[in-house]
Amino acid sequence: MDTQIQRFAVANLRRRPLVVETGGFVAGFSPDTDSPYLNYATPLPGAAPTANDVAGLVAQFRDRGLLPRLEFAPQAAPRVEPALRAAGFTTEAVHEYLVCTPDTLTVPRAVSVPRVQTPATDEQYAALDAALGEAFGDGFASSPEGVARLRRMQDDGGAVRFVPAADGGCAGGAACSPPAEDTAELGGVGTRPAYRGRGIATAVTAALAEAMFVQGAGSVWLEYSGDGSRRVYERVGFRPQGTRLYLSLPVQRS
Picture 1 (cartoon, rainbow, N blue to C red):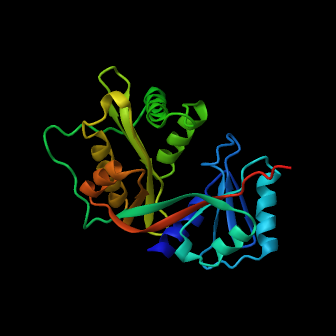
Picture 2: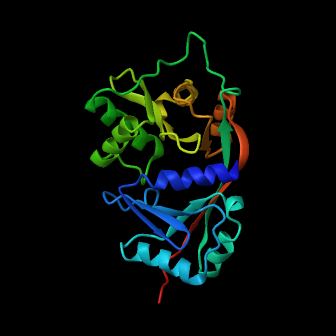
Picture 3: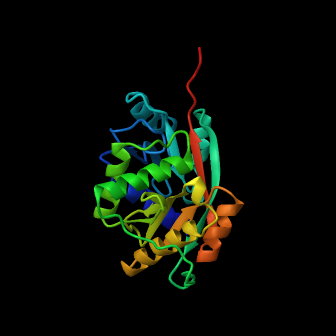
């Protein structure tokens, strides 16, 4: 599964507005933001970069005033991590990823399950973006660019889902990338604090996975942020399959 996930990572980055391929790496940049979560690189499966290859990749980030950063499944390219660490890259995080297939998907059917919708209006996309900003806190503020990214994901073959709130806004939601390499990435599952504990994350996650399987994807994968969220995803049918590594190169202080 690691190699498939890594092939997906490459294909997904190649969808970015600006793509640079150098030395066995693919870097995807979003010119409307300097967020490190939207500007990063990943290696080709099996890549064996030299020191010069890594230096060339770093230059692509430094020239744009961005943090050199990578996300990848290390087992799919085992020679990449040593090369990056030799250049000074350090660990941001190691995340386990979970995978759901049509055979493992469990869709909640209880009468009390929250009503999941697909946003159709600018107001609904904006409400979802605002809800996710509130859910994730600092570093994820709502913005017109965030709203546009959600709409593009839906329009480009992915899926965006939300649960309406009693105040007329959005209680929570998430998005799933368009499929590539027979899989899709589900991410950004967020619920506003006032609406947590009501099954919103479970309902949205199941609805998104189901939507991808209807489109023909063989699997959907995601990463979780804690034991609580892991239990939510496991109830829907996601199972552990491997890990992904996040590395970045700190600014050198003189």
